[in-house]
Length: 383
Ligand SMILES: *Cc1c(COP(=O)(O)O)cnc(C)c1O
Image (cartoon, rainbow, N blue to C red):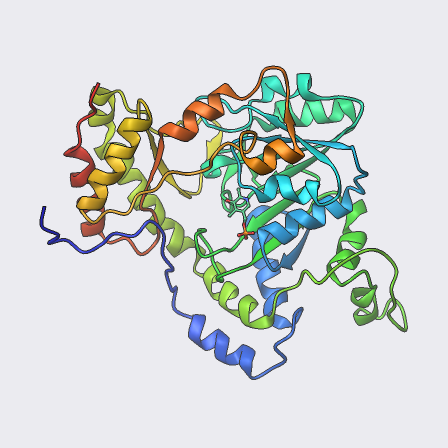
């Protein structure tokens, strides 16, 4: 077919208006980290998440790596991780010699199945890492209760969930530690960037030291100590002021970004509902008590062949859709460094083959949304 439409990309960067001015202001000062824009961005993230302490990092991956260090993991310790997740949710702990124990996801929200967690706990278990997939909260009351019963730390990988909430509580404020991503595929972006949210304030001063190469430089700048020195393990996890400046502009435009993303998400959800029901295709589930931040919109096809057929069908109509996570437990790294429980992760294996993400970003125009919806509606499942 002829491509008369423009290409609708899966992700995109939406400039909220102040990015150029703030980059210029950052260039007039020191470019290294922890300057005025870093403080502004951290304060805005703190307001959105209600986090105890916000530390800007170079990525969500580096914030997760900091969690691995803060947990003081020893070789052979175990961390419970969803198999349906990004690789960094597991590698952060593998880097410390710990074993990720993969748990299956729920068939509705695709989040870690909280009912399977307790059976995965052993005497070596130290923490439970969760991902709020698509920014829809995991069943956190149940997860926090299991963690409390077994003395485990909860880490929220909240890369999708900035601005989302669970029973009135912001995502990112629920675990002892939480992480954010500002990668170019996320709602709020600076190319590569992230944050560590420290809700257990007993971990805050050590988190600051680990982020500053194992030194007490932060205390020195606040006048708490008269010289700074090496005190603990650590690395360089802080981003440049240039990135913090761009990120500040994005965070100040958060409401605008979110209005635009929700408009596209809601249009897909409503306009595809009848077609999806007729074709036996699943749409996202958002349980009561969960407010999601329109991070991604997915469809669940009946099987792999139909998922691949819809991807190709959309590409011919200039709509760039994509699949998503491949199960961690069947990946080469997952097999080498992790394990599953006896139950395995059969839901994750099925979902990974069937899931398709539609374009979703703040720069989508109403005509882009029409183009996506028309392209999807012209597809028929083959049985
Ligand atoms: C994007 C993402 C990450 C990694 O984020 P980076 O900032 O690119 O390191 C980690 N976990 C999840 C769930 C993600 O979606």
